[in-house]
Image (cartoon, rainbow, N blue to C red; front, side, top):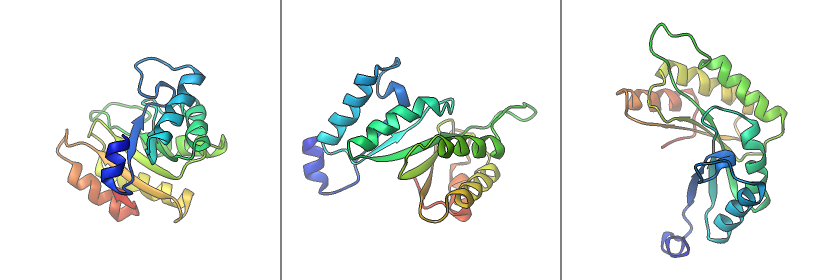
Length: 171
């Protein structure tokens, strides 16, 4: 990481972390979560994109505090997906709004917010409405971005919808 940082000359070096799992496949102890943040800060990582696949805000709170304690930028994540037509589930704009409200209510400090559609299945209209909702709740000072994949063939439409709705960036 030190060599990458040296050659990247000030680039925003980011790592993706799974909340209380950080880079592990199992839940980490508090000491390991703190050590994760400390070592990535020491070796020139700039930002930690921090997510919980099930949007369990409790699994983000402690890792977020460690990330900020060690001087890293914290990019909180709300995980998105869509369900097949006809399936009922919680993955709608209201669900994402409630998740964001809980993050704000419990005081998770973040520098930016990413909506992460790792399945690449979220409907562009839902993305548009979700980004608009987040922009309204967070104002213009919080960097909002979208991350998606090309699984369902809608990534370009999803990115355009996010930008049209006020996202500051896309991956």
